[in-house]
Image (cartoon, rainbow over all chains, first blue to last red; front, side):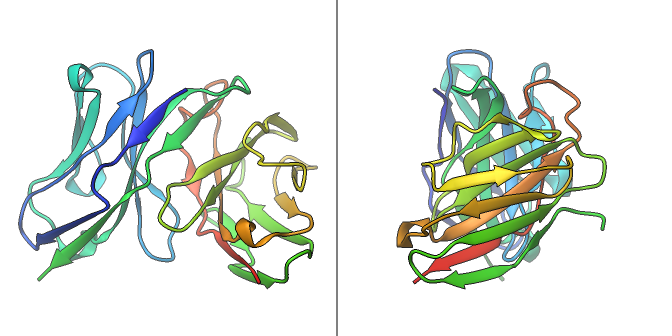
Length: 116
Length: 118
């Protein structure tokens, strides 16, 4: 079974600073990996996804993530954080479930706090 | 509407009561997913529909939970004999299901229904 670890429950950064959110996954085969963002009162929104090919993936809102197979990681980065980026961020891995379908398994999330 | 909608946005009930949570997916999306998100946790899969049928219900925690999608669009999650441990945000997502088996397609999430069982 697949699993995702987001080791940081909270991350605090200053506006304009760079950001890296960590994600480690466990899955026996080539993973499909996702990052979602959840703002208060909003549904989860897909930021980016990795299926294959270039290991550096560009997403929306200026985010990018890099897949590193050797480290089983898929860390999310942004060079300059804006106050509106304050939200909950979830990493997810897709692998086969016992029911036979491909369903995302989510990490517990990292809460991003942005200081002015 | 343009996105996935869920009603009600909040539901407070008493232990032992029956509740229904509704999800309206994006028009034309054949795949629909239900997740449960407890406080401080990520979404946890419950059930996945492909059209009218439940393609994977392996995430339903017990037989008190049931979901239907009779016409392949709107879905209802039903919880019988609610328990305090059922308190959570219930999320619905839909996708165009461009690939078989679900999951790798982009899922569009609704805002969720916050269920509180007193």
